[in-house]
Image 1: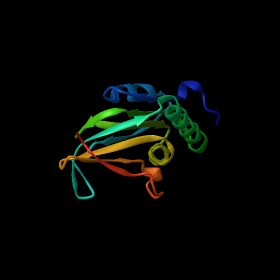
Image 2 (image 1 turned 135 degrees about the vertical axis):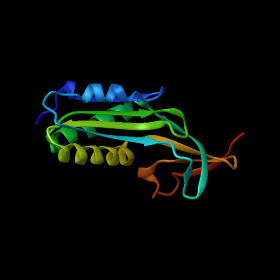
Image 3 (image 1 turned 135 degrees about the horizontal axis):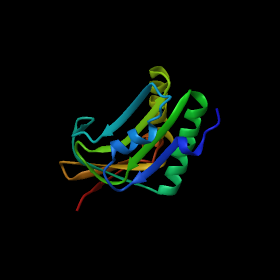
Length: 158
């Protein structure tokens, strides 16, 4: 299956994620299933109380990498459409930080494709996350690079 340009929506945004936009984009009369994933900011991580997250990236580069993932999804599964949106800047507790929607003829392909897309996004897209904790400390983390030395640093917030 060759990816059609109107089958992929990938974007980086500074504003809250509009879930209706994702649903509207992937809606297709030939789709019998839509799977979505929404990553939310939670109030704890690894035993620490989180106050907020902050995200940074080069939007053009990140969107290009997201488009590669989306094109791969369209090649591997019988997916009709895929949408991926990641938020930048401050993302408070309970707010969506990343969202993916996939439509397909059947649920199995939609679930698998959505699962694959979020895992690939977290592993390969150069988006940097800063966790801010209640003790005033913070740490920049990139999940795909966390096993490599030098990719996590702590700093004191002013």
